[in-house]
Length: 124
Image (cartoon, rainbow, N blue to C red):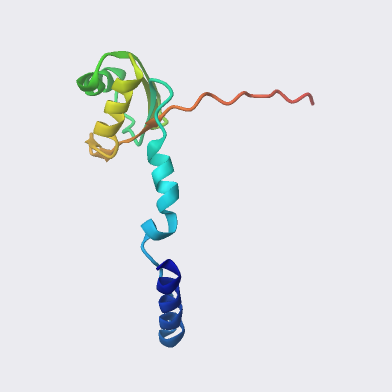
């Protein structure tokens, strides 16, 4: 079926002189499914696209709707921060509920926090 679909698209492309692309699900369906199956490993979340005026207290109040907040750390003047929930399931709920939501006029970007990169000091 896919071969037929791509053959028809190729014929249309050559006749019309335009590029036709199949829906993303056709091209990337397998990758999308694999990505969705990955569960969070920890309870610490990255919070991005924050207004510079957002405080730790505001973040704690926002995330408290999804469970117990252990720690909040807004990186001053950078527009992002980290929120640690008491467990993994609460962190997942917060991510699902807040990712893309509007806060202080900006769409929040919520993702699982990655471990800090190790910094190697160069010997000069």
